Image (cartoon, rainbow, N blue to C red; front, side, top):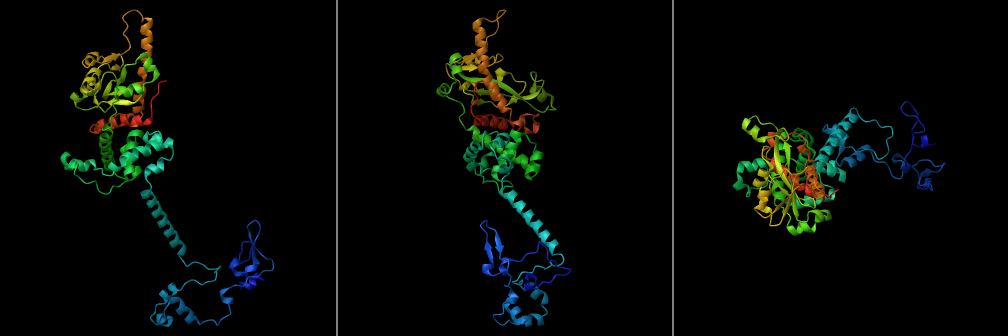
Length: 439
């Protein structure tokens, strides 16, 4: 009965199977109902009856009249002008279902090509609109690995603080062309190839993760020269921003946050200092090679001085010097002595023979005692152990600094122009990782 009602007889192109369906719109309203489970069902004796060709309530218009009504113009004129193709293309689809329609030749291929183009456009838009940072950093663990910030919240607070000024950045190459005096009046660099936050993320991947510039260029879809320009620009920008932060703690601040162990053994200590060295590429010039060669590391290095408060915060960072410089000389040249006050205590290793320098400002040196007899006395042993337990704090902070993986490999000499800025930025950003507690 259904086959007869829809006027479809079985043949080579049509067979009634269990997968043959009729739309519910062709049945009477009462023939279709919903079960308690929400399924749409039809009465067993229901027969489809609603079809466009079955409506005999009014006289059917002629083909010309129906076509003229659909096209909005006289089809006789269209036919006389020979516009059969346009007419056929303009005729809308019939209102009834065409279950057995076949697409014209090549229609599927054209549809697939159209789908491919649209999918490619969606991918391009998603890459443009979604920063790379959001693709890689989706959890606090990701932020710790890629940026060295302990959580997304800390990173967001830091980014909110620097974003207003970062949006006015002038690229290093443009600043170099204009000169130092004209940079302050320069307009921000033109439309960037990357969002501002992705430029910082690129800088983080270079310093925190240690990725090479070629890898970053492929990852962000830019040239290696663009990567180099972004890294240098952000190294100098962060150096200015972080360098303006007063990280040197006053005596009252040091005492307020001093751990109990320091109050017992070294109540007057204000800072713990130590030097660290970073391997660098061996220069070809003999003079520069001799200046950068470190007998301690048996390699050419850059050397810097780090000061840490008893609470574990980095409070002093020197610039990098050539590896041949002594600890005493680097302490003298870095300006560290000028920050001390009368009565301050400076904790260091035995190799820091800077007591004469400290006496000029009335400060004292706290180091493990030297052995003058066959063995230490009980008091000397206890003092040595106490200082060793407390002084380890600066070494743990330096380890945090060196967890910026740019320092894992030998630093190329091409970074010599910006390595001081990168070094200082990494040291100061360590303070955002939270306090370093004694074990």
